[in-house]
Image 1 (cartoon, rainbow, N blue to C red):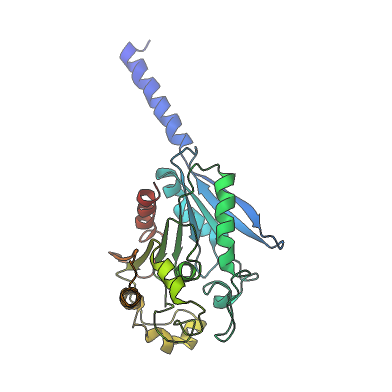
Image 2 (cartoon, rainbow, N blue to C red):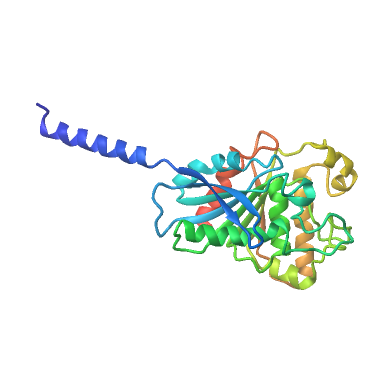
Length: 293
């Protein structure tokens, strides 16, 4: 027969074991439908128990359109930091090429007028509102994150949707930018349909640019990038330099518009080039945990 103190220790062990087993994040999948009947897939990770402190983060996948993989990258952090993470899937079939996803699907050539109502950008608030209800979240504080192609989407979203309700948006390691210059869209403000009032409102929302210090490749990584590489490298020789130059341009533009700027830039001490899972996600997750409280 076990001594009394041994029984207590054994009981505590099994209680802790049960808590550990029940604390794994729950991963799943559902669909969201727009008014016009178009559906997109959503992958989610959430803590075992959603409570009043649980917060929402919408994560944008990369150019491989691998929403499920991006969800898995965030699964541990969803559990540890009490986050519901939702990753919408913008498939190549529904949102083809860079135009349909990275650039938000607002147009396919500079001279066209932007069509925000039918853009891929227009799904985000719908995704957020449905997620807040589906997971019965008590706070409408939410974050938006993208890496690579997803970061292209995020940094353009914050410019085109300055009225969006996000609490914090983070873009990590995108390849090139919609710069604060008179370059032709999609590389600058000319024919972008972004006016000064939109810029002022955008600058007053919380946005963070995350740059990996090892993201310094000077070679194009896709055929499309190769076809526009002169315009890309005009912004800087590699992603790190292009990010720095973009943010300096934002600082100058905010001074020109005499607008208080709530944007920031951080450089992450990465080691493995253009990588997301181990290098950027842990930092972004911690930032959302602190900011969305």
